[in-house]
Image 1 (cartoon, each protein chain N blue to C red):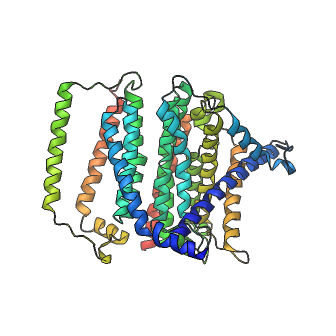
Image 2 (cartoon, each protein chain N blue to C red):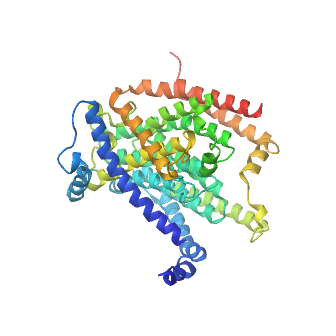
Image 3 (cartoon, helix red, strand yellow):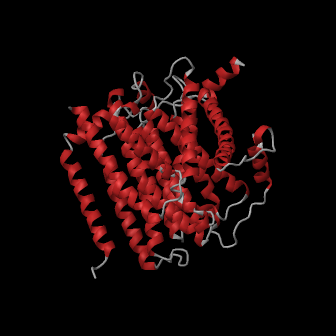
Amino acid sequence: MSGLIQVLNNSLLSQDAVIKATFYPIAFLTLFFAFLVVMSRSIFHSVIYLAFTLIGIAGIYLYLDAEFLAIVQVLIYVGAIVTLFIFTIMLTTQADTEPIRGTVRRMWAGALAGFAIFLILSKVITMTTWHIGLPEAAFVNLRELGRSLMSKYALPFEVISLISLAALVGVIVIGRGRKR
Amino acid sequence: MLMMLIAGIAVLAFISASAMFLIWWERKVSAHIQSRFGPMRVGWHGVLQPIADAVKLLLKEDIRPAEADKLVWWLAPFFAVVPPVMAFAAIPFGKSLIPKDLNVGILYIMAISSVCVIGIFMAGWGSNNKYSLLGGMRSAAQIVSYEIPMILSMITVVMHANSLSMQKIVEAQSRHWNILHPNMLLAALVYTIAATAEVNRAPFDIPEAESELVAGFHTEYSGMKFAMFFIGEYTNLFIIAAISTTLFFGGWHGPFLPPVVWFLSKTYLCIFIWMWVRWTFPRARVDQLMAFAWKVLTPIAFVNLAITGWLLLK
């Protein structure tokens, strides 16, 4: 029995084997759902696929040892933004009656935008020098993160909150409609 | 890794046992509050009733509405069950009895439980039924609003313990429980109210208000899919009680008895209070509900957070 456990722990269930066995399925599923987001005819289905894609990306973050980022990804993107999307869909369109129909012009516009983003991202990826195998100390400590948000990056942080506030006020103004 | 597998299996076994027990207990508590006996026939005082119900639900036909959005309708019950089960990964049952002591434990639970709302929405939308859709909408609005005071009150505790890890939060209470601080008491109150709304229990069970919406988002579900919503609901109830035990009532700390016993008895006591509340208070109106979240609970939580921060920095 203990021999079996040893074997299981060393080969089949070792950290390394599990990581190798799970990374590619998760990466594939993330891409697959991202593809479905674009290809789906129903806008509601798109949002659900988007939720899966974002969860998949959170999984990828876990492989990078960025626990905090993964969790925030789920909390903000899946928990808040996808919910907001669903709300918006339900309040605005008759999403169930009208399937989305792509026109040729839209297709070209989409292809162009996608290609532009691809170019920018590949430029960024090739320009960055990648450090493979970071030392232990390089892991982002939560304490450090908080401290730098409140000191070094205080200004950008405040600017972002100001933008959010402006958006919030804007939404309320639009949502209230004209005063009678 | 093998240990983690075993922990996973143990957690799954515990969840199904606990959900069954809670369903029986809820029926008993509600019955006794209303001067009835509740289930009495199957086993001693009806303890085996949930098993009989589970067998019935397993054998029941799985009816799908003709006009339902197949994919969404089929996926929704999974969203109701999987997140609460995942949340168990960071619940500290004892000193070393925690599936995984994440250093961002409490944040992990917040994130995972925020996914639940998508499942409710999917159920409401996929059923293609106006009552289901209304139930889903109400539920989503309610959960999104009450999440804010809930998370704010959790953060109050995090600031006190100086850590996001569930074990560290418990260890910080080895002297005295958090609830003994006045500002923590306020946080506990806010948390309790918000959590009641978060799991859709009376007086905040607007999403499934029987008299208005039949059964809300799970009107069209039958058989095992309905059972999944049920299990999800009771697992969620256990999770919120376990969190309140961990954050405010000292977790597994306690004299004489082993830590697990302390943790479970505190948790089930919290659950009992939630049941008591459910069967004694009338349902709140929709507009009252939303106004209460935004105009009362959220400001209180914010002010409490600010005061706690000031006290800690003083």
